[in-house]
Length: 372
Ligand code: PMP
Image (cartoon, rainbow, N blue to C red; front, side, top):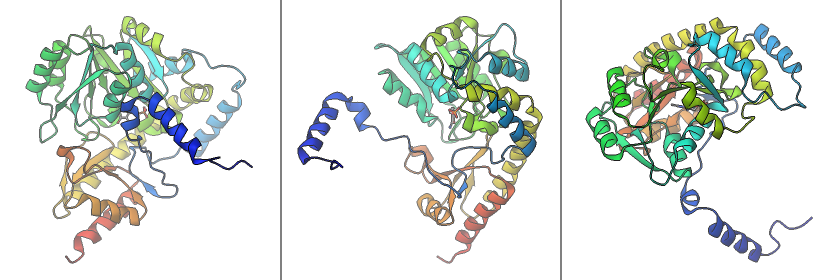
């Protein structure tokens, strides 16, 4: 066997090549961390905690067995599109584009607008991939701070739009990582003021009281982006954009031709035919969210922010210590302390099953009761 490094010279040469080849801003960037937590209580990634019922899992197995894996998938994902249209009651005048998760939709939409003189705007803090994709596409990104209570600073948004004339504005509706739903009238003002495209990202629509999907064709510059990840299908990697066919046709040119794999395409229509199962789970998660939020609010020194998502943002007395105590109990949440000044001492807790939430509350209660 060859030694891993034949000589230190090889490593030096490689490092020099990388430094001369990979962009400075990419080398300087941290990796988007995906935590591994096998057999832990996983409350960090906004997954639905419920697995498929056994009969549905068997149906999925049969659908997968029928797939011609030797063939490329349908480029447009026609069966998935038809199933989504039916389940969303989509207007026949609206068009759809599918993505490998809404992560890919964000990448495609960014690439379609990116240009040396283009600007992308989003409130801050919000979903980090808006900024990262702008950076990858070498496009200027302007982050407009939210208010202390995480509501939109509408005058600041409108001033930024007026000054920088952005090609694209991202609005997560509801917002991640804060969990709140921005004021709908404010969003509408932004859509009206924006000279370019406004993408309303409704990843958490199933847990929210507002949506722009029925109004997507009411404006000349609106697309709505969604995902099936948060409703119980994160493993399938399927996101979608809804908008006027003229917008979607442009994005479709940028999309890789076979971006949604054949197994996902076979499984999704089967699952969407059981939309009632997922709707029941979403309702259970919403009511569990209320119970979890109320119990967290009873802990001394904890502030719970209102949530329209499947997670709850809390400000605690010592986020690093609380995160560590949970980790020691093999419970994983997201520590946002240090991510943004407005998120100081904040943890983001995904709503789990009642048992998982109880385990989390148990650890936190003992932490609060501990002397000192
Ligand atoms: N948008 C928002 C606001 C999100 O929070 C996330 C996931 N954290 C995504 C998009 C991406 O989701 P996915 O790629 O699983 O569809």
